[in-house]
Amino acid sequence: NEPEEERAAGLRHSLPNTPALAHITLLPTFIHPKDLSRLVQKPSNVSPAKMYLEESAEKERYVAMDGQRHRKSSEHKPLIVPNLEPKYPSRSTTSNFNPFVGSTRFYILIVLFATNTAMYLARINMSVAIVYMYRDDQEFEKSLVLSSFYWGYASSQILAGYLAARYGGKIMLGLSILVSGVGTCLIPLFPSLSSVILIRALVGVCQGANYPSQMILLSGWIPWFERSRALSIISAGESLGTIIALFGGPYCQNWHYIFYYSGIANLAILVIVLAAFSESPEDMKDSPWLSDTELRFIQSGRTGTIKPKPVPYMKFLTNIPYLSCVCIHFCSDWGYLLILSYLPSYWKGVYQVTDEQMAYFSVIPVIGIPIISILGATFADWLLSKKVRLLTVRKCMSAVGLWAPALCFHMLSYCKPCRANCPTFRFAVATMIVGVSLRGFQTGGWASNYLDIGPGYVSHLFSIANSVGAVSGILAPLVTGAIIADGVSNWGIVFNTVAALYTLGGVVFVAFAKAHVLFD
Image: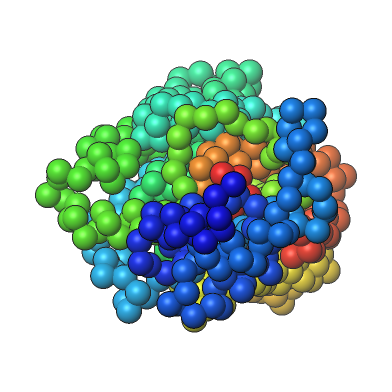
């Protein structure tokens, strides 16, 4: 019952002489947007407390009902501030600006790049070895072996994401590399069909922890405005591992050495990962390798961190923007994993190339992926620095990365079988190079979107989507094997299927994707 002026004076005395918005949380909980705008627009010499009391005292009325307080009128509703995209920092807005190249986080990305090189070497080596392990008329056995890796890969993603979030990305990444290397070395020792399928499935289970673990490390080490470039660097390791496997495999003395070399490479990179960095930059704050300036810079650019907390799986599975990421992930992986599995078989079966030609023409299309990925992701981060909306960048990069390859794969469906070096073969090589290379634009698009929408749950978000994407690694070889079992002329059906899925995935993502934090 104290007079209004005394109430205003008391509240004014408790507030320092600072801008109104700095202490807006000390004012009553429910503020109408119009009231807030008038509060901001008032001259700075007028007490914010008095302004609020004068303009809203008559409007803020509550009545007691069943022991709770409710509004008497629906005119005023709680002020809801929507999730907004983060603002790009600049040298003029932060004193902690730290160069990307040459920083500690850059060297960590190089280590993760090498990790993915070794992991993909162990994954893709089967695409070359299978040409020598089984006869041409054993398409069913080939499809089973090629898909067996993804049986384990798809089944372990969600559990791997949970374990990585609980026990740390570095620990799970180390275990993944260890078992992947040992399992790969065991394949030549147990070459029966059932043993190869079992070991490949086990390797797939362990490699399922690779990217969920790395996503946690990226969320802690990389500011949001550098994540396109960061993801492009580490994903370039996929291409290098694929190139080494496809190009070097045919030159091994026999298929046994393909697996031995791949396994040893994984065990070597494990030692580097364990010695190179810690789980988070805070764990290295006393290390001479990480400066205080870079630590502050990383902390200022993080939109969220991984903390042990309940995982809202139902919220994930009912969120349309996130489901659009899952959809485009599946569609993209169908074409990419199909090419990785069947590209050597395609050149040899349709165009009768030699072993040396098979190695060369299998590698050429993949070389363009890391080049386009790094250039495209750098361009995406440059657009962000020019104040282009994050959502616009993600959608445009995704559209180019899927729709342009879709057109290329549709054109490949018109290529007919012939001998190597015929005009159709040269056209197929050129079109395959363009179609596979342009996939690199996706890195700055949907592939980085998981870090945008849920930095605190990134391992869970990515593991769920990657599980669905890995299902395409199971289905694509089986479906392709069934289609081409009747003749290599049916490759046109295979390529049109890829083109249709690429188109669908791009449309869904462009229509429904978001780029601000949805899960916090």
